[in-house]
Image (cartoon, rainbow, N blue to C red; front, side):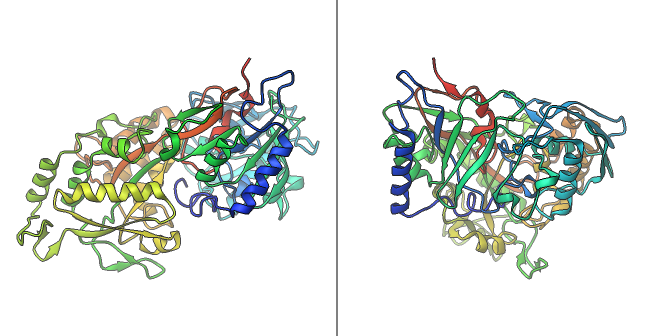
Length: 544
């Protein structure tokens, strides 16, 4: 699942640490690197070491069978397939793969020259073990469609599905292969894999040091040692200013600031932000007794009016300082996106017209429309730790108030949001390289399933389109149905149809990078969990 429940300590808590600890780390890094980060590639000998502050650590560790690597390269482990710089699926451990005509059988041939970082060979048995373990883990890795997986020989794996699922191939792209012989209880904190790097030191809450894996079967990385500092974005910016890091992920508010010896890398992403509206009327509860539904947001006119009233370009310019783009769906500009979902926004007159036609009028003159005795007033919650979401929530509330709708903005902890999200609007974030995310967020069968489909949205026709997409024989065949699920000319899950969400913006991911460092071709990045910028790290090197 993308968005909010990925890796604890990244999406929820950020990357905070005491100032004294930060100072110690920077001094340590300075001694380790020698002459510091920026500008240090010049001279007779170029460093084969990097210092990065590009994201938080995973409190749950680095075990792919429980979710590590879903939002970027698993780094320590290899995958059967991968995506190239254009997001096309290509071989990694696999030398070839084929899908049966009925879509139920995936046969994968793997390389015969691969070893784990401890020297043991990687075989088909390790692949079988990895997928069987992930299927039993009860984690966010969803392998319920997998009937069985078996090793036909040392280098051939056969996956059998319970039913066709066109998105299954994405699991072959994201699932890092773990060693059957060394996958113990502490594996997540001491990972062994066949990826380009191996973990050599992890100081919890502070830093992680990795070294190039000399047994890696692919192109050997130029950089032999990398230190990841676990810093909040503001602290990462300070470290970049001090010349102690080579790459620093920074917030949009600081992206326009110049840093001597560094360039700004502005990377497109599908890391989106949007408002999830409770879709059903109030009156019920979930399995844990939390309230479900909202009488205001369950009204289509309210949801459509908000979508039309929001000025997305103004949000990009004002909140994101230009580092982003307007968002209209969960998958803008990806192959399965339907461009017909784009509509004219920032139209207050149209928003007022929608409300009036829906029976909402300001009868008492207080500026807030009502329908009978029901006021167009509800609460919008956001994670209090996220300044960007706070700013988006407040700016959006100001915009829709002009149309006669009151959104009361409140910051909450993630634990509080989990209890409130079925009955209050929530400013969420998602963004993934698989259309399965659309299914998770919108399909009726996932209503109230933890963080999936938190607003209890369901449209039988939309569900049918997504079921057809999943049952298609290939990703290409599925595209038509994914697009129709968003909008088929009459209905759909987008704002042109049922409008269960008001998507606001897609964030650009902003990094300050040592001006002498070439990071290759940067891909469209997913939601910000993990370290998506490192997906092509074997291509990184100093400029000539």
